Image (tube, each protein chain N blue to C red):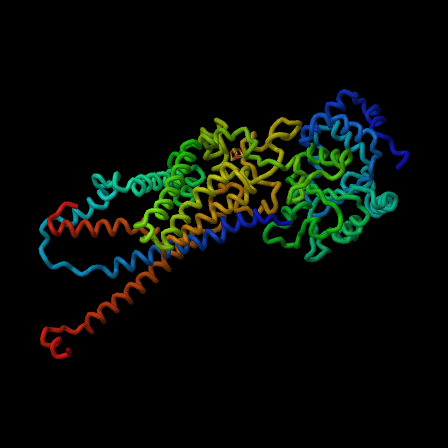
Amino acid sequence: MANTPMLAEMMKTHGISRRAFMKYCASLTSLMALSPALAPRVAEALENAPRPSVIWLSFQECTGCTEAITRSHAPTIEDLIFNAVSLDYHHTLQAASGHAAEEAREHAMKQHYGKYILIVDGSIPIKDPGYSCIAGISNLDMLKETAAGAAAIVSVGTCAAYGGVGHADPNPTGAVAVSEIIKDKPIINVPGCPPIPVVMTGVLAHFLSFGIPELDELGRPKAFYGNSIHDRCYRRPFYDKGQFAEGFDDEGAREGWCLYKLGCKGPTTKSACATVKWNNGVSFPIEAGHPCLGCTEPDFWDNGGFYKPLSVPAGDYRDAGLAAVAGGAALGAASALLAKAGKTKAAQAHETVDAHDLEKSS
Amino acid sequence: MNSPAFDLLMWARGPAFDIALTIFIGGIIIRVLEIVILGRKKDMAAPKGNPVAQGFKTIFSRSIPREGLVKFAPITYLGGYIFHLGFFVAFLFFAPHIALFTDAFGIKWPDAGRVIIESATALAVIALLALIYSRMTDPVRKALTTFDDYLVLILSGLPLITGYVAVNKLFGDGQMMIAIHILSVEALMIAFPFTKLMHAVTFVMSRYYNGTIQGRKGAES
Ligand code: SF4
Ligand code: SF4
């Protein structure tokens, strides 16, 4: 790794000024919710860190995650971060294929054993590992083998982090997250479908400069997944005032009112979309008029329907209600008739007593 | 990887709601049918007044306290009013709740903003606490209070408190608090047919019945 170029040289060859780099470090620092005073430390760490080897494994995925990160308003300082690492294996992006590609992976693993970063996108089928193979190696085997020598694993995208779309009901392939299989390595989850490119690079920058970031109970870096969309949403004043869009083309939609009634999952979704936004901070789904789907949360595909408001029951409750009406009517009538029969019986059994009878019996 | 909060929320929105709804609707129908089918003995005597008119009148007139009674039992009356009004404003005019009715019946009505909903909620909770306090301190009320009364008071207060906490993210995980809020409502729904909460349905029948008795006697109810 000694002869791998340092970031400073990379910057020169990319024609990036020191000023632009410092600005990027400052924005990264604030993004990671660190004190601005730490920006120089981030810069220093990024500049002086030797480029670590990165192996990127793609399993059951749609390539959306890779697409997102590679299409991130390139070329920018963010892909410089990728130049700051040595991406030694990524079967979608690398030129080599088949056995040559696998050789590259094995070579990188051997050379940097115990030190490389493993990035995974996509879920792993465990029902029958044969459902998804690369060069004849099942995803399960490849993950276990590659994870063994990794310093840390970054699960990019909801599929790798929580199982994602593959894991959605009825989960035909038995898809699971990386964390279900690998238990002995630090795993950073960067969920999202796909995650925000700058969040992916931000997490890597944090890892390079300060190590593993602080994670929440779902393994997500708190700096990027600490707040709900709802708490940072610019449409929140409309929610509070009770002004809602009820359709995609009604007055409320045109006025930019809250999308809760159109199924927005912002209140239960933690992500940086509302603050960091997408496409170089241009916009994010809610700003474009579409409710949040909740893609950074486990099992978001099975949350009862993307366009169903959060307060609406997720199941077929109408059937339950109708069954209750029928069952209640039958049971109620039966129990009332039983009581009525008891009443009639009691009335029949009722003996009239007069004063003479009373005298007799006493 | 599973999120316990998300799983609980989905359970509350899914199977738990179905169970609660079934017990709620089924239970109410069973109890109403029992009362109606069992009926009352026919009164053969010719009525002196107008029992039907008095019956209907009583359904509404009993919502207005008799003169002097507010002063006599202010906590019971004012607390009762504030609690009921606050509860129903928060229940019926909070947009997410209306969304539920829209989904179920296709009907909708205007919603109230956060200030109104939260003031109503806070007032209802304060009223509820005052009612509990008066039950615990007033010797007569204390003697009359059963476990059922406290249970009902707590069950109707929990949705208000948990809803307030969930909306304002006062503490706990956001998903978890919404799940707990929904579950608290489901507990209320399940208890409804089998406790005094049934008064929300049976008050119409009992007031009408009481009114007709007075009407038969030619008295004003
Ligand atoms: S998380 Fe979404 S974008 Fe990423 S691989 Fe899975 S389905 Fe595709
Ligand atoms: S659009 Fe969604 S996230 Fe924004 S305020 Fe409305 S419910 Fe919350």
